[in-house]
Image (cartoon, rainbow, N blue to C red; front, side, top):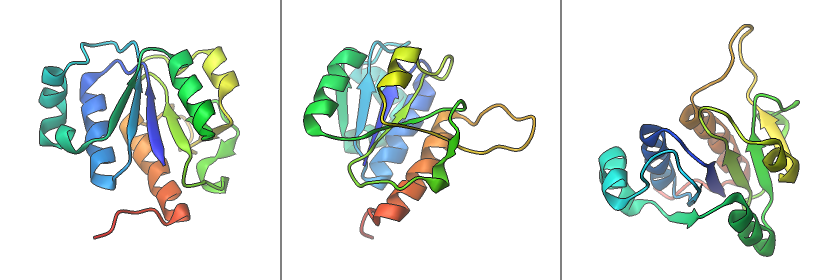
Length: 153
């Protein structure tokens, strides 16, 4: 299981995502360009001492990321409010990559068209969306439960 952040634009969310991934033993792909300076100093500020424990792969573009993932044969699973399939109705595989869009704009149509599956988190009537880190944690928890891939304690 992996998490991919498509052009993240809020450093605090990226830090929280790296912390979540480090704690759960899940690698993170950061697909650039980012909406902030993605440097060691910036990461330390937002990710605290968890950044050293995070497994981070950086990709300069969606195309570069996609080439790596297609070669690896991993399935790309996008979390989006526009999806029809609820995340709990999906059968996850242990090598899936959960793709998270930009906090401000999601992903462009070309990215949405390139993924293998699109999932949504059902929300109460009138609610638009969850914070990207919260959404990732909800779906990641279910994916790890299904694949029995929680870290050993």
